[in-house]
Image (tube, rainbow, N blue to C red):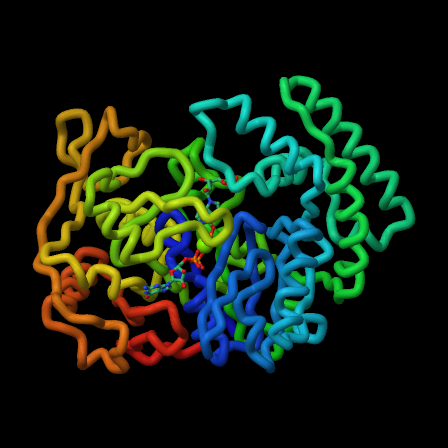
Length: 426
Ligand code: GDP
Ligand code: IMO
Ligand code: MG
């Protein structure tokens, strides 16, 4: 069996958690391949609303194995809180969660470094979630990081202390006051929870599972436009969020990737700083934010909202080799009499249809096309046949432009509010 991948095509928060949860019954294994607690993946079912940060979104299903892959960075304190939150909901995490020994650990001093670095950038800050993501990946590529597998070594504390000393040295460059001792105590205590879970060599585990014919879905975090290489650099996260990240983040060979599910909102949002060509700074943006409850699942920050951006979406589809598109939040557009989509950019006086190197507003503005909206509440629909004609036209238009079928349309946050246009086979 090949490994299917589900990932975000925009700036994150496309609804990955919800759709992974919906797809989970079709898979034996759900594996997160990158990112860390900067992610907030929301699941809603049976009146429960739950946000996951590090734990894969298959965790609520009985017979599914969930894996935290080597490409992920984890903060043991946040991880412990996640486990406690799931325990309250009677989810036995221990029996169905496996953690790669190669997963990197976020230390309290990584979080301090993140905060110090953002403070030093002032108005040019990235708008990081301040979870220590950037500094942890820097230590990974700088070959200084601590990994989950190090917890099994006798000299773990020596390694920890050496890394903290390095961080304290680095922090001297910043005019930043900090005290991480209390957090350090919590961190050390939370390691006990982490150590009570099962650590694996996940690349071998996944390789064997594939041989045995098990079906596997790789769950991405963030979105392609936040990718460290291809996103709106430097306003990006510090990992490869694109499909190639599933190969390196799980140890899966490129020719073993099967379907690539690319998920996008029927409009666009972004949280944090950085260019956003279709951003609506007027009341339409406010209306989208209100209708879509666009507030960050991790930080609670209001999300910036704008129209769907086709050149950006085409770029993401190309980078990921998307085979199936999933459109979420179609219901949020119901209150708009007229919709707009960006079909091209005015780029330094020229009309272009590709996503260029520099998408700053000084260089680029969107070319917008108006489309008729639909005045129908979609949230109670249970079959695609009930979709209003204007929405069917919207979908048909997008499929023609994007050259990939939209196989799933999501019309609300709940598991049940998911319309299948084609049978999705694992
Ligand atoms: P993720 O990071 O990609 O998993 O997405 P988030 O959970 O951060 O943000 C998506 C938000 O939209 C969550 O609050 C979901 O419950 C919600 N959501 C997902 N799909 C839909 C949908 O089709 N319609 C509406 N109205 N909300 C949705
Ligand atoms: P999910 O998985 C939306 C954004 C931050 C910031 C930038 C860098 O829920 O879609 P970082 O903390 O990674 O250094 O922040 O990336 N960001 C996200 N935006 N959804 C996410 O995850 C995000 N994870 C990071 O807001 O702009
Ligand atoms: Mg999110």
